[in-house]
Image (cartoon, rainbow, N blue to C red):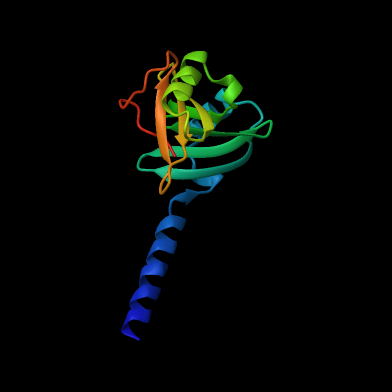
Length: 148
């Protein structure tokens, strides 16, 4: 019985903890909304979350998934969008084919951070998938963290 009460309390804690991150459009400062709307044309299905002092938004443009992170002053810190393998730079494709020919890779994303382009790729592993970030020239970088 004690175990059931404990597990129920933990579940309630996690559910309310996760729900508190979501924010409504009314809770977003107008400077953030204005900056977002100036940067992205016709976004649909917006879902906002508060990440510390910043605001993260998931959305779609022309049925392509996007994500953006803006600070409380409205500055775009980074963004990403889903892309196809055909949209990867040849240098990234070459590295994937050379180093991961025995693995499946998918979930390609283009990240824009401080005016630089990075490519995030998911490598399917036996127990847990691994995400890697590449520069446009095909170099793996650990300087740019994976963005889920």
